[in-house]
Length: 446
Ligand code: PLP
Image (cartoon, rainbow, N blue to C red):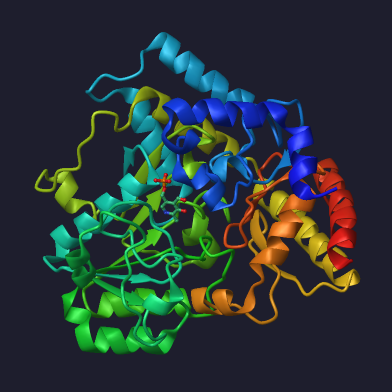
C-alpha cells in the first residue's frame, strides 16, 4: 500500500473538507504553513478535538500529538485549569475593555516572577507582533538602524525580520558573508539594507561584524536555540558572546523565546542558559494554548514604553482571555519538579527514537532540549542552517513522517521543524510512540 492510498483511506472526511475549504478560504487553510506545499501532503488533516497529549481528526483517528498547535499547547489540549480560568474571567468580567484591569497586573506579576531577566512585560497578540515591536523598540532606544539576524532562524512575518529563513541557498551568498534574502513576496528589497545576516554559532564572523559595524547595530536578535531549522543548540559560550559583544558596542540583545519560553525551562533560556538579554519576545507556551504574546525586558529596556515616548499600542493587547490564560498557565508551571520530569520523559522518547533508527541501520541522531527536539536524518554534525541543508535527507524524513502518521503519531512533516512534548505527556504516550516507531523504522530500513 502506498502512503497516498493508506492516508486517503483513513481520512476521507479531511479530504472532503479540504475541497470545501478551498472555495471560501484561500488555499483551503487559515495559514500558508498548513498547506500541502509546506509538507501537509496530500492535504492537511482537519481536526475535531484535542485532549491532553492526544488529538483526534474528523475521521475519528486519534494521534499522540507532538505538533501541539506548533508549540502553544505546552499543557496539552484543553487543560481544565486554564480553560476554567478563561471561561470564568470572560463570564464574570468580559473580554476587552480598552482600559486596564487588575487581572492584567496579576498576569504581568506572575511572568516577572517566572523569568529571571524580565522586570516588566507588555502583552500582545502574536509572536510576529511581539518581535516587530521589540526590533522597533531597539531602534528607538539606540537611535541606530541595523538589526543583526541569523540564517535559518524564524522571527515571524513582519517585514523587518522576514528574511533569510529557508531561502534558496544559491541566493544566500557565502557563509562568511551571507546576503539577506526576503522569505517571500511583498517585502521591500531596500529593507535588506537595514539588516546584517550572519551564520549562527559562528563566533568569528560575529566578532568581526561587531568590530566593523558594532556602532551601527541597534539589536542582535536570535532564538536562544534554533528551533526553526530542526533543533540546533548553541555552542558553549556563544550566547554569552552575543551578550558581551552587544553590551560592548551599546547594542541591544533580543532573545526570541517564542518557542523556548516556558518550554526548555520554566524561566526559558534566561534560566536554562543563564544569559539575560535586554528584550525577550514570547508567544506560544505563555498562554497555555490561548493566543497571547508578550514583550518582556529590563526596566531600562522598557523605559521608552514606560514614559510614553515609544508607542506600543493595540486594541486587543492584554485582553481578558490573554491575561486569564497567562495567569493560570504561570500557576501550573510552578509545580515543583514538573520540568525535570518532562525533560526526562522527552529525553526517553528522543533516545528511544535514535536507537530504534540506528538498530535498523539508519543514520539518524537527535538534538534536543527535552521537551523539544528533532530527529535528524543526517550524515554529519549540524551547527547552523547551511550544515542542515548540506547534511539532511528530507526524503527520508518525509517517509518517516508518513509511516508515523498512519500509525497514529502526529508531528510536523518537515525535517526543519521539530517535535514538541507537553507537560502532560506521560509514559504511555512514549511507549505507544516508540512502538509505532519500531514498525515505521523497519519499513524505512527496507
Ligand atoms: N519567533 C519564533 C522563534 C517563532 O518560532 C515564531 C513562530 O513560529 C514566531 C516568532 C512568530 O510567531 P507567531 O506565529 O505567533 O506570529
